[in-house]
Length: 456
Image (cartoon, rainbow, N blue to C red; front, side, top):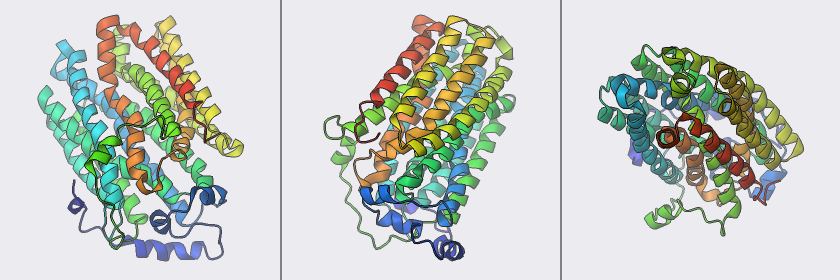
């Protein structure tokens, strides 16, 4: 998407935001200056590490807008791949639902893998009166909303695959700049609370999205439209009330296609910590979503609930959410107070693996409930700490969005690729084969994090 795709009618919000924020920080020299300034001229890593700032004024406003913005994006990822898309595929082609879902998901996953780092590179180089992030937040959500309407109207597998691919591309052009706001504007010493609440929003979205998706089981098209409207409102509010300063006069780094293609290769020798952080997240998320992304079909066929499975997907989501929320809060607070990230990531990954053992050993609805509790707690704790760890191992401050876009492949790709991975496993080993694969990948992800050297 070119820079011209930015909405021309977005109001010049930076001046209004600065005027509104001015009374809030008259005597707070330790607080960051206007957040957009921090974005354009980031302090050296050591200086940001030494800062001790209070989350108030513009920083508090940013936090209060980031949380619902993240929620609106992750509720979409939680509702569609795990509930709405499988239900729609089942309605279109019930005889080959596993294969058809794998096909649709694979096409979308490939698009997501390319789109997010490309979106990050484009966002890093965007020059506009609204800065480099806000235009993509608004434009991406509007285009993504239209593509969701296209999914609602699809009545064939090919149409559905095309519409889902367009949704993936549009919302990845949102997710890359949205992720870059944390290292752009937030000092390291305050990133724990931002990551904890951002993780809370993403986990509530991912798990609560399953509940929301199940509530639209009889009205799938209406569910897509509701998700589109929610994301458009929340992301536009973030852009309006936390607008970037104009960066029209800032020099733009030339785009090098060869260098961009090289970003898909994360060198374990040049950037070992970046590599291990990426690998750890990729393994854990793949293990988690390879199982939970198949919850609907697991309940239908592995547990044997048949048509009653949809209601139990919502129940699993609520149970998991009840375990996830306290884990996120505890993980973020403990991480900031201890100043340690790796041990918490390791413990949470091990908990996810332990939870997946339960229904593998005893296939029953009760076991699925227990899995939701243990896995929900582990995954919540992981989410509260992982994003902070990622921001501390990025290779370059000049390409935050691009690098986070690559890193975010490790989170977004498993969510949309899970039906593909699961389809292969189910075809070869049956539904029971999902659990040992998820357990093994989660444990490997836990051990990968311990290879990181620059973060405690």
